[in-house]
Length: 277
Image (cartoon, rainbow, N blue to C red; front, side, top):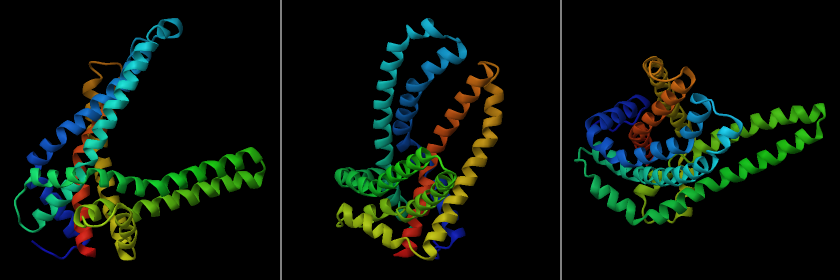
């Protein structure tokens, strides 16, 4: 396989990995994706069905509140389990993509066993990566609230300026931590803190722009696919459900469908990691 990890070669190899192992990859994602779909569905759609389809209001709706709250709590719990199982797939896909790149066979059990042995370290690594983002978000909220309370023209201008600045900071930080899963997968001797710091160090210079180009490509391609399918899906669902609820259900199902594209993203970043190393 071509070891020249250019933008186009990374995309080509990522689609090759996804296509060759499509059945195996989908099978590994079925349970995590189903748990997320089921958890989100029982959290949101009962209340939507009662308010949008049955048009319940006031006292009629209030009698269903205990059931809605119970389903909401249960759904969130199931959704969290699904998300965690889904995230545990990421290091496994890194190892699988590396084997594909080296012309080796797909052995998901071996990848999964390696990940599960280190799942506590993986959680700590994700927390390290999330912590600066949380700090940035909290500081963003506090400063913007202060600007809104002041109410002066300068404060209003500062409010919009801070939104722009913090958005830019979020984008840069998100790019800097893109390889945290790959570093975790391929450098098992490192501590969670060291993995986080290495991810920041690896993403510099031209690699940041290449990562941005890759994520932009996959985001635009995924968005275009969802848009095309949503038109067809909305048309079909409108025969069975009311228009607004049909579109909501259709958009939800299609957004869940994009979860199956995870291996594409992970493989592209894995090949980017190999380019850097």
